[in-house]
Length: 164
Image (cartoon, rainbow, N blue to C red; front, side, top):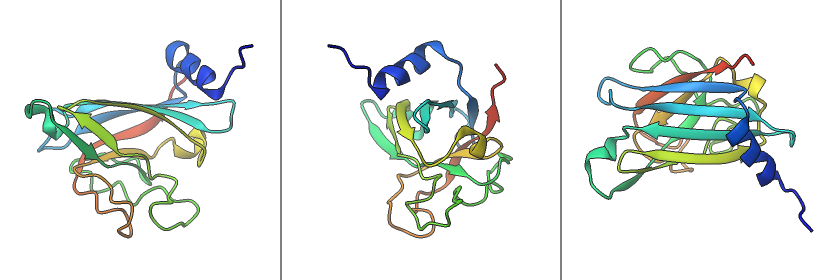
C-alpha cells in the first residue's frame, strides 16, 4: 500500500506551487555572469523546502569540472556590490558555526551550474524575508569561526516574499 512521505509533498510543491519567497541572485563585479534563484517553500511539516538554481559559477570555463561554493543566509538584505553590507550569518539562536540557522549546504557547481533542493527546519519563511542569500567563492569548512572560511562573497540576492 502506498504511504505518502514528505518527499511526495515536496515534489508537489516544486512542480505545482509558487514559492513563499524567492531570492534572485546576482554576481559581483568579478563574477558578473553569476545569476540564479533560491526559492523558499513553507511546508506542512513545519520546515522550509529550499530550491537553488545557480548559473555562471566560476568553474564554468573548466570542462567537466566540479567545485563547491558556500551558501548562507545573511542577516541583512543589502546586496549592494561588493556585498559588504549583508552582515553575519543569520543566527537567531546565537549558536557557533556551523549551527547558525543561516548555514546552508554548499552548492556543488558542475561546470558553472548548480541545482539543489533540501529541507530545513531551523526557520520559517517569514523569519528570513528581507535577509539575503550569499554565494561564496569557496566551500564552507564547517569548522572555522565565525563563518566557515568560505571566501569572497561572489553572489547575493535579497529574500523577497512572493504574493500569491
